[in-house]
Amino acid sequence: MTEEKTWSQRFEGALHPAIARFNASIGFDIQLIEYDLTGSMAHAKMLGKTGIISLDEADKLIKGLEQIRQEYRQGLFKPGIDAEDVHFAVERRLTELVGDVGKKLHTARSRNDQVGTDTRLYLRDQIQQIQQQIREFQSVLLELADRHVETLIPGYTHLQRAQPISLAHHLLAYFEMVQRDWERLGEVYQRVDICPLGAGALAGTTFPIDRHFSAEELGFSRPYNNSLDAVSDRDFAIEFLCASSLILVHLSRLSEEVILWASQEFSFITLTDSCATGSSIMPQKKNPDVPELVRGKTGRVFGHLQGMLVLMKGLPLAYNKDLQEDKECLFDAVKTVKACLEAMTILMSEGITFREERLAEAVAEDFSNATDVADYLAAKGVPFREAYNLVGKVVKTSLSAGKLLKDLTLEEWKALHPAFETDIYAAIAPKQVVSARNSYGGTGFEQVRQALTEAKIRFKQV
Image 1 (cartoon, rainbow, N blue to C red):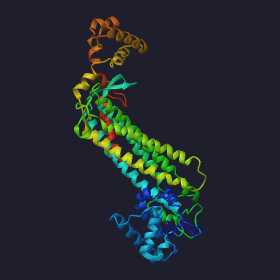
Image 2 (image 1 turned 30 degrees about the vertical axis):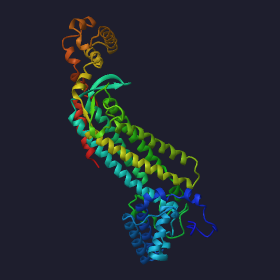
Image 3 (image 1 turned 90 degrees about the vertical axis):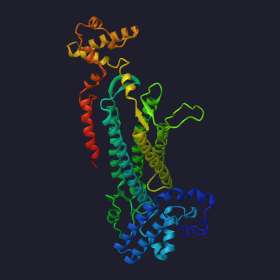
Image 4 (image 1 turned 60 degrees about the horizontal axis):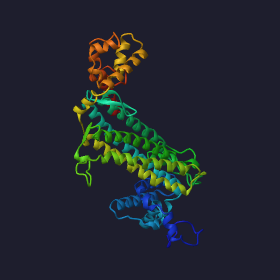
């Protein structure tokens, strides 16, 4: 940039080298090069179609751009900081390849609408890839749920034992969370799928361009209605970061549970060697690094969302250089979400083994069937609140005596209330406790099997 300025002769001197480095984005926006080339080809084709340049010139531009694509893929095109950004790098190389006609590519276009187009093309691709990863993760959850419909696990509220549930029911809760993530990304895609190309710097152009043609050529649903909005809108980026944050929230919640389940205190799962590491000093350790890293990386994406909100909150219309800062946070969020989805999919498919005997012991060693005792009495006509208080007393007495509810004799039950009969023991058995919760969306085995069937149907929908 000290040899030849990329802007007009309004400037007599070159940028200070430090300012050139500070100003340059080529170090990270080179990731957009394939999208920049695609957008430029569509623009060149539009310029030829509308007669702004000749069809022969448009053809030369398109062939030159395709050559740059091949050079980049072969590792032959490596623009440096003197190019400032990917857009100037491409234009300069194009002019080297096709001569002065290369200088016509930027007719009726600004870097402002150009970078907006590139970013949206990039994000459309990434959203589709992340949606596919979510589907792969859901597939693993469905497979696990299929195997564990009648495997019981303690259910918790306030991290206190609450009621036993089907393990499949627990896993399907995460299926529902990431199903919303998949749908939410689809909704974000609709806002990404609007084309700013042709909006110019901020006010459109005097040339007779065809913005609808450009949008259609690039597969966008439509062009932006307002040129000012087109070059300054980053709502779509904020929405993507919000959707990404929620994906990480869900993965982090599951990660936390896996970490707990793998602890000696819970011992609900065993970590396989392929997804765990050891300690550098304690030879007995097997550490749950994958879920811990996912839990930790969640904060990165949250930070990018906050950064984008702060970036946008005070920007006047239209384009401002501040918007250069949108890319690194988007690129890193995409990378982080994809890496976490891949790692959690592997972890859940081959990194953990549920200890079914331990789970069976866990649901039989507490008072999580107390609600079922109250329900038992309520079904026999005892007002629920009265039954609730009666069961609270018997739990208190049993704790003092070191007994569980299943250990009480029939005489002790009848002393509590004459409505108790021998069928109380079957009613509070863990499998019956779970099976009986057969309300829609509940943990009853019949409901879980139905939920699995419905989940598989939704999973197959495109």
